[in-house]
Image 1 (spheres, rainbow, N blue to C red):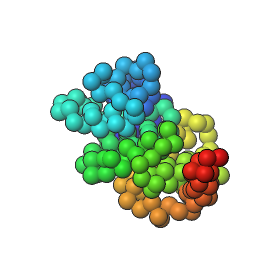
Image 2: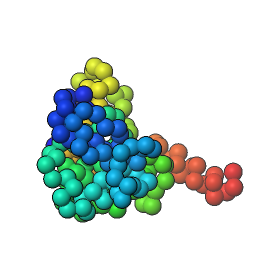
Image 3: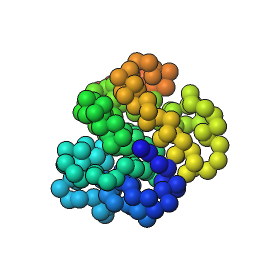
Image 4: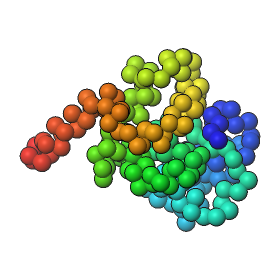
Length: 185
């Protein structure tokens, strides 16, 4: 289950895509200098989280996942740990969404579209989520966004076209940028 970083209160947990705090038993992060086990390291925290799932017993006794900021890599990482069966069914695509969010590169264009949509959902001006989520400080906002988006991750990953209102404008700009690159501009 997800617990907002500022509500951990020293409970045993795993931190994804961020740094450890009191009670952190395992850190799964691509951040430089993080105490992530060396044999799990990769370019994205999402890849690291999936690798952790492949290590039997590594997560035993830890039932809380947290992160201190919201981005696509953090969302995918937390999703992998919270709903491993569903996440594993979408593993490569989910990692591509994390890649699109963190590095603006992608294998499947739909991944970039979902990354655009997730960014829009985290923006109080464009989000379809309850506006009350965006009242208060960043820590509360971040926690509420994880709580709202994580249960929907499978649905979001499965239906990029349904997210068109939140990615269409940025996708059109991406098309222009890619065309300009192809033309040597």
